[in-house]
Image 1 (cartoon, rainbow over the protein chains, first blue to last red):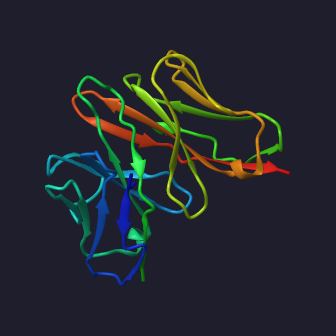
Image 2 (cartoon, each protein chain N blue to C red):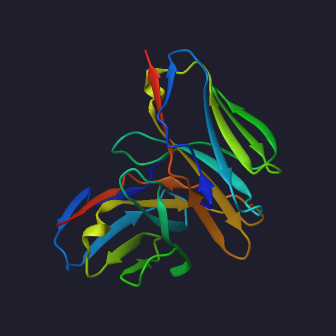
Length: 116
Length: 112
């Protein structure tokens, strides 16, 4: 059973550039959430995709956008990169059956983005 | 006030002792609570979740939830050096929208 996968593992960009990160959810999962984790901090929720639509969004600017494909995989795009965007970007997948109130998420290995 | 608060630590315990990790949350509508373990440079790994008041045990780990006090804890019995990591508390709320909020994590050091 494949877990959550992310690519690339590491990425170095310069300010002003654009970046695309990719995520494939755990087998059987249909919901993908993206998080940003700065050094020494907990993951900060960026947004969540379900049925190819952005369902929830955290407090992140429009420079952060995403997409979910019919096979449930997802992309995170960040435009006009800033130094402060340097972080570990985590993808988490989940499946919330009807009538269940919890949201057990499984994380991928993350993509380490460095903006110079 | 932060939505989910944890003591950043580090919390140092000797090998074989009980480690007690605490978390408080501000949203009374929060429904379920998760503990993740994160080794340095790695992604969070789910250890346990709990959504009913009381205790939930899984091996050496016990999660405790008190919704009236808005408090959740994780006990690790017979702590091992391999338990040394940062422990993240996450709170899930579903009230017309789904939201998961993480604390900043508590760093645990188990001393051999």
